[in-house]
Length: 302
Image 1 (cartoon, rainbow, N blue to C red):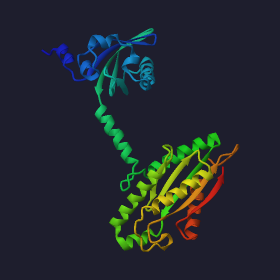
Image 2: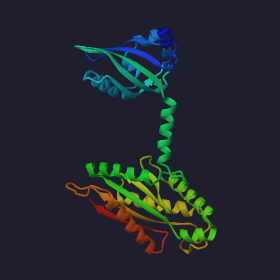
Image 3: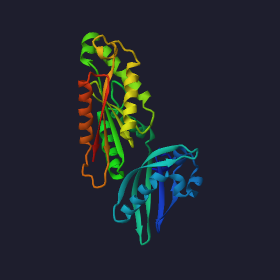
Image 4: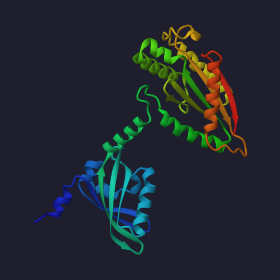
């Protein structure tokens, strides 16, 4: 005959019973695995208010889940952030089942599994998905997400948003002369130099594609963007990477830069950032036409 109490007491998951009355939650039962997962003894855990068990960011999730059960759902699954006795945060997957529904509350059983390692791995994979595999800086996907986000912020606040597009001068000739492995090393060195030259944490450096890089500068007017553009160009030439087919910079690797700044205005109608990208691309094309290794800027009223 199965000993159900023994099964409960030896479960690796944390199994709890919670009473919800007039919107107030109180745990009335917990298995010994509570101590292993959260560090509290069962007696300590049952005395804790909900706000000392779960992180503040998880409270709306818990209350919304309780409302869903109160409306008639029998089961639910949510992922929440909990706080251990030692202060460390862990991620729990809570599988909740309604036991009894009453006029002003309900009783539920919660099976909580520690998924912290899985959550950290998922977050790491998400981060890697936004990084360029060659240079280690943000990739085009991350840039596209950032420019959409920052454009909306700038558009609402009527604030300036600047963009730099940089292209390695005569890069095809560099690859033809030194080989593609040296070309990869060159791009990595440029990405590192640019990242070091950009000081604000809000600024975004990304590989735009091939030998082209982008730098997005929130809340930055044209004058400030041009200053940074010249600093980036100087940072690249300061690397002194040999490039015998690049006469425009004394036979070392250099970049050309196009700068565009969108200036939000009341009643503006441009709701997407394509204009900013086109303006920066046109400025970059002009910089190439002027002999490379230089900066050209243009403004855009939106």
